[in-house]
Image 1 (cartoon, rainbow, N blue to C red):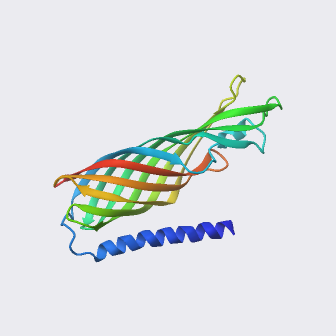
Image 2: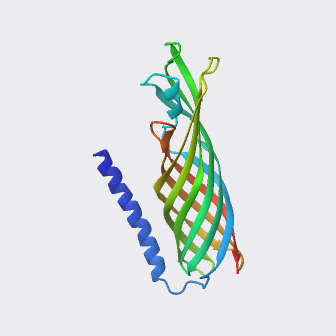
Length: 227
């Protein structure tokens, strides 16, 4: 049942974003920017939605430990390069760094068989490729939506303060195919646009190795058009 609900939710998200893209394609009054290359940077806030960042603690604690988030937000960085295939449809390649989130895992130490708390940190970064649709509202202002994939790399560490040989470190690369987003775009000048975007990256990390969770990223960015 859980898998079916996740599948249905994913279909709804994809359907909603596809509608945005097709609606954009139906608009013929968009300003002509087809064929442009652009690049930019975005800064903002990254938040890990699910409290599942304690994966590395499995190396230090017996099964059944509990995970409690202590800080699931950090600064986020986004570097983007793109190509405007047509007036209302483009493609982007982005580098993203979500920083680290921290949590405490409480359970029984494997080395001492006593109660212990492991401090864990989950760091994620990677590359995303997305189709980006634009729905013009005015000459300079528009709504944007995106769907894409994310190639992530996660590093997870855990340590028991005061213990000996208690540092554990795991790394794991992987893909998520449910990168979605929506936002607003404003043309400051002919060569510069400003963006505000919300994006979600589903199931980043590995449940059994590094820990896993959904990451939300909100950024304010500037794009420079190469005319």
